Image (cartoon, rainbow, N blue to C red):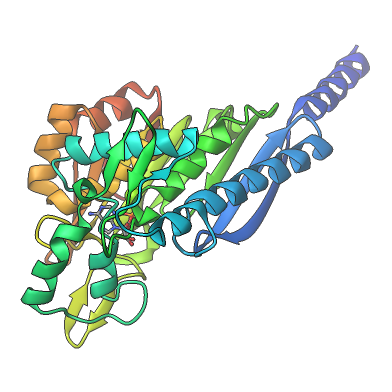
Length: 340
Ligand code: AMP
Ligand code: MG
C-alpha cells in the first residue's frame, strides 16, 4: 500500500512536470534600450518560436515608430517637406488619432511634437541650456497642433522645423502590437526598460515586476505582480543629463518648453501599453500634486515615488489603490516599504 502511494506520488509529480510550461528568455537591443523577453509555452520549441515572433514584432514596431533611427516611417515623416500633406497608412493614422486624443485629454502635458525642444536641450546628445528667446522661437513648431492632421483623408502635414518624438509612446505602442499577435502561449513578458508588459498566464498567475527607487535606481522600492496589461515608469534616469550644475531632465513641459521640475518617478498601470506609456510621461510633467488630482478624476491607476529630503514618499491615485486592494490586475508584494 505504501509502495502504491509512493508510486502514485511519483507519477503525479511527473505529470505536473510534464504540464508545467517551459520558459524561454532572451535579451536584445532595440529602441535605444536593452529589451528582455520571456515566453512560456507547453514545450521548448513553441516557447522559442514565440520569443522569435515577439522579437520580430518589436523590430517591426521599431521600423515604424522609432526616432532613434532615421530610416523608420516616423523618421521619414520627420524629413517630409513642410507644408505638403503626406498620406498615412491606416496603422499610423490610428496612432495619430490616439496621439491627438491623449494630447488633448492631458491638457497638452503629453505632446509627441516636442522634438525641436528635445533637440534644443540636447537631451539625446550634449545637454545645453537654450536661451529664453530660442525656446520661445521653437514653441510654435513644437506643438502637435502645428501638425495639420486630417483624420478622414488620413494625411498629415509637417510644419517647418517640426519633429515628432516617439520617446513618450513608442514602447507602449510596441507592446500593444505584440499583444495583437495572439500567440499560442501560456504567457509572455516584455521588459522594454521603463515599460513592462505581460500577456496571458505568468508564473504563479502573474509576473513579479520590481519598481526602482528613484534615489538609487539599482534598488527596488517595491514590487507589483503584473497579471495583464502594462506598467510604464517615467522618471529621472540615466537619460537625465547635466549642463554645469543644472540637471536637465529628459521630460519636457511642452507648454513652457522647460524640463519638468519633478525629480522622482511615476508608474502607471493600464491594460493598453500605449495609454500607460503616454500617461506616465504626462503625469511626470504634471507632478504629484496636479497629477494625482487629474489621475483621480480620470480614474487612472498611477503611483508617484517622491523624494522628500532623503526619504521616499509614495502616493498613489484611487485607481491604483483599488487595483492593489482588489488584486484583479496587480497587487503589491511589498518589500520593505509597508503597504501602499
Ligand atoms: P518616457 O520615458 O516614456 O516618459 O518618455 C520620455 C521621452 O519622451 C523623452 O526622452 C523625449 O524623447 C520624449 N518627451 C519628452 N517630454 C515629452 C512630453 N511632454 N510629451 C511627450 N514626449 C515627451
Ligand atoms: Mg512614456
